[in-house]
Image (cartoon, rainbow, N blue to C red; front, side, top):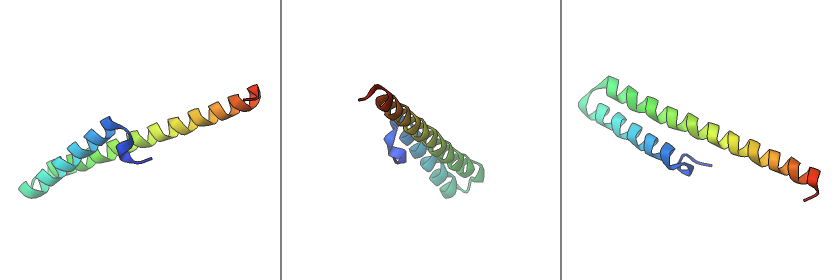
Length: 69
């Protein structure tokens, strides 16, 4: 799965990229760092979502085996 799998994470990533770019253009290191942090947060949230999906799939697979489906 990619960062674009969750629209909220995609929006946060885009917001971070915009802040980083604006900080780079204006020479505002604080804004640039904030944008990078936003992107990192979006990636972390997506990773948690991906893990949760995999756990759910695993639970479903075990459930199917136990019930004979």
